Amino acid sequence: MRVFALILSGLVIMSCQESQPAMSEFTGNEVTYALQPGSEYPISGLATFKERKDGSTSVIISLDGTEGNILLPVHLHLGDISAADADVAAWLNPVAAKNGGSETHLNRLADETPISYNELKNLSACIKIHLAEIGPDRDVVLAGGNIGSAVSLDGSRTSMGVCKSE
Image 1 (tube, rainbow, N blue to C red):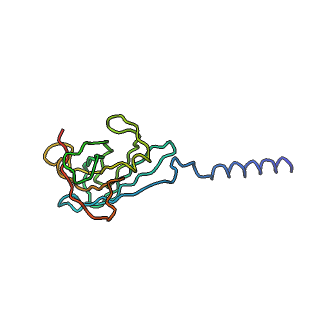
Image 2 (cartoon, rainbow, N blue to C red; image 1 turned 135 degrees about the vertical axis):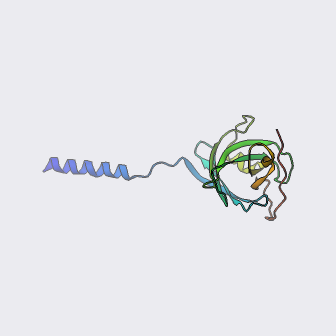
Image 3 (cartoon, rainbow, N blue to C red; image 1 turned 60 degrees about the horizontal axis):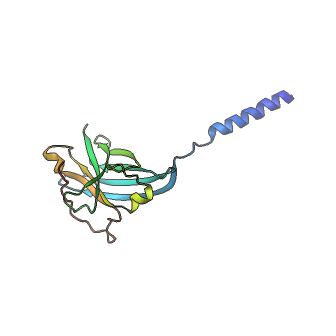
């Protein structure tokens, strides 16, 4: 009987350990920015920045109104979204048009400067989702929005500047 009790208690302990949720890689800190249509295409969505425990950021783009099997380039630009020819601070993973989603683990800018979640959420910058990476459709901004300190306090919409050709 004693052996049976030991086996039973061992099974209970093992089953409790298996049912515990996995440790999250996130701190729980996050901020979400609206992405507004940037052209005649009715595409909008959200950019969510989630702080990871290592201080880096997961940037999650969720768009409504996309379709097809193309990849839509996503750039993080320095400055306000209305500024023409703003420098690219980082290239984010493209949005898959079939589901409108993209996720990028961001811990460095394009020039290799390290950037933390706190620095990113205070950066004066914007996100632009383009129709194409090259050619004339590169200048078509499907959706975009200011992030960090570039966000308008009154919530007003600004125009979207054309991106720098490189």
